[in-house]
Amino acid sequence: MDKSSRQSTTELAELSELDKQLINLLQRGLPVAERPFLAIAEQLNSSEDEVLERLNHLMTSRVLTRFGPMFDAVCLGGAFTLAALAVPENRFEEVAAQVNSFDEVAHNYRRTHDFNMWFVVGAESEAEVNQVISSIEKTTALPVLNTPKLEEFYVQLYLPA
Amino acid sequence: MSQLSSAQHLHQLEQERSVTENDSTGIFSTAKSNIAVNREKDALSLSQQQELRAILEKGLPHAAQPYLLIAQALNTTEAQVLAQIQLWQEDSLIKRFGLVVKHRKLGFKANAMVVWNIADEQVDDVAAQLSSCSEVSLCYRRPRRLPDWPYNLFCMIHGTDREIVTAQIDAMVKKFSLSYVEKDILFSFKAYKQQGARYTKQGI
Image (cartoon, rainbow over the protein chains, first blue to last red):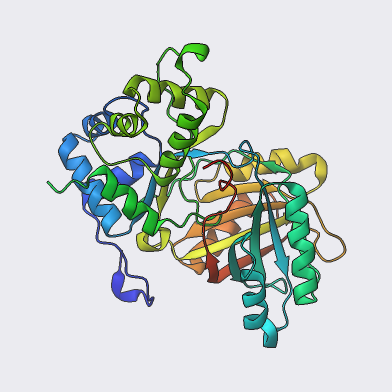
């Protein structure tokens, strides 16, 4: 990759060939077995120690932040929605602070659209989610576009390193 | 070899944890194991289950036998930890093995949400087509909110820059003959908040 052409505050990670193979392979899964990293090492023609050493390194350099089985939030009884606001430009920072002040708002992105603020609300029940949405409408005096997930299509995410 | 101890590792994860939907780059099928599980005999106690869940949510220890370390913390056996995870997989409580990659550090700097207005009877087919594209990371059906929001299918795409992502979307439109479909592309350019959701506060 041509790094000189990039202008960004985010530093691009320096990855060895093994790092790349490791990231690519781990995105496909990890065996639930007594020696999972040994199984990975065998596939990569590496050693268990080396795989663990590289994983620690990727963690320390913050290329990876978490690794392991992920629970299905809905199965655990949680409720989520993706919601948006069309915020007047001169109120953007103010409204961002208002929305972010809710603990139930998990994250909030500015996007290129009239609906320029997109955030996820997560709570323990659908009723609680709807309550938060109403409170956000009251606090910001803006109508919330509420788009809860109706169906999730299976996607195998794979970001080749 | 510099291997973090389990405790250090968990502490580090605690510090660094930031899992978000847009950011949840670790989505793939869970690797199935061949452990034979006896539902009555192998399930851990309820408090052990809660503790195991809390540990797994922070991430696996990077040790040769990560499940053994977890078992020691729970005062149980490695076999029982593996069996419990197997049970959760069977119950779809765990359906993905996660790897949270900082996609910006891998050069994936453009994050697009592509929204489509697809005829209801075609949503499943089009969603299947779009989901088959390696650059699509999430694909959800969501309700239209007329008159302001006619879109009912949402895809997330992570790409190396906006031009490339736009070209990828153009290629999808062409490949699946979607040029007649109303759509919009929303690029994100600033995250104002990123934190894990609160749904696990109960019971841990």
